[in-house]
Amino acid sequence: MYPRVRAPELPQNFPWLNTDQPISLQQLKGRVVILDFWTYCCINCLHILPELKYLEQKYKDSLTVIGVHSAKFDNEKETENIRQALLRYDIEHPVLVDRGFQIWQEYAVRAWPTVMVIDPQGYVIAHFSGEGHRHVLDELIQKLIDEHQKKGTINFQELNLTLAKQQKPLTTPLAFPGKVLATNTSLFIADTGHHRIVITSREGEVFHLIGTGKSGLTDGSFWEAQFFAPQGMAFDEENQILYVADTENHALRRVDLKRQIIETIAGTGVQSHNIRPHGGNGLETDLSSPWDLQKVGNSLFIAMAGLHQIWEMSLETSVIKTYAGTGAEACIDGSLAESVFAQPSGVTTDGKELYIADSEVSSIRAIQMVEPQQVRTICGSGDLFGFGDVDGQGSNVLLQHCLGVEYAQNYLWVADTYNHKIKLVNPHTGHCQTVLGDGLVGLQDGQGKNSRFSEPSGLSVIGSHLYIADTNNHSIRCVDLDTLCVTTLEFPGLCAPNVCIP
Image (cartoon, rainbow, N blue to C red; front, top):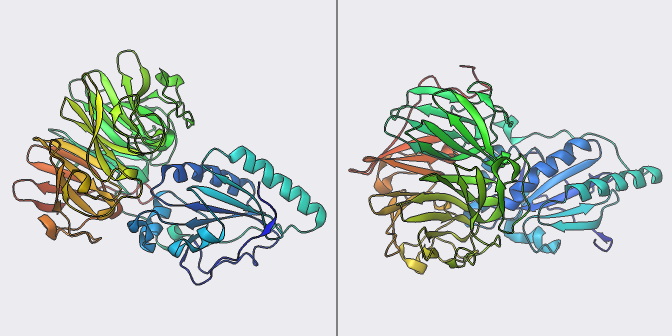
């Protein structure tokens, strides 16, 4: 708990989002206010958004939540990129862009995420860091309302806001596609913002839409199943089974393409807060933001971003368990049990090693799958705050929140997401070079570095083509690897779920 101190006023001359005008604490007198200090790369920050949404809806006439976006990465300092994050994560409260950590410092914040609770008389009375505080916050808000209702100092009135999604509704056929998976005959697209999987030909002809387009955790047929912000996928071609990391449902789903049926195979729908290495039966084990998948034999390897670990699921026994990582957040090499990751968000393999896009330390890691099963860092600084845009070798390389990695022909393709580039890494020497993108945000086809992307997050290679989930451009890009020519795929007839119903 906090000593009772007057809450510093919020700056009116900083950028505000999800509101058509700045909001002052003076205006909010008589209401309970929560300031949520966050940054949109941070998985822990994303985890508390549902908690805040629950509280906002429960106490909509007496609680105001204001997000204070204090950026970690340079790319997150751009107001337009933050606005995209509000759309991506369906954030419906005002967000203040905290330039230069000014508000962070005034409130003596130390970590992401942190929430400050301000009472109806404008005093900070509590703060909580990390996630999992919904119950405590719920009780505290109710207590404040009861207390100030008796004193006559509460103001019951619902606030009207002008949301980013109302100002500029998203009507593109794809919405923030997070991952793409190419096979000999098809493209599987995680249409993350539309909560569905789109199956097309490699040229863009739409074969199937899987999911209703509304978020939920529902098994069943292609047209009745529901996902919640799906990300990485793995394909069993022999049995025509697609495995999906259903990220915000904290679940793994199995799509039987022959029977056109979706089943949940792991996760309970409840987020795990247990970072200790553990495991159990798939359907009885809580997971936390599985972000990407790689099938090796009868095992599924999972980039478990929310627990900063790599997990493994046996497809024979349905047992799922921690494979590597202590659950701490850092970059530490060594044995599977000693190793430490930081929000792993991409996984691929050459059959001997797993390769990991370890996003919060902006590094590419490798896990040897046979004895002695060691973890090593291929390139990147290995530091939570060691990021940038520098090609080179090993620890001299600087990446910025890399989310995607794909092995092909002895090299690793890397989605250097916050640098808006695609890079090529030699997994043996650690040499890294920019191949696609000039580093500026844009949707520009062209050859090599004459192309532009916007937070590309997923990669897949088949034959002589590289497919890119160009997330903030709501697009899938195709690269001819012989010429390095980038084109943008068109999907005739594909609509956003809220625009038309196929």
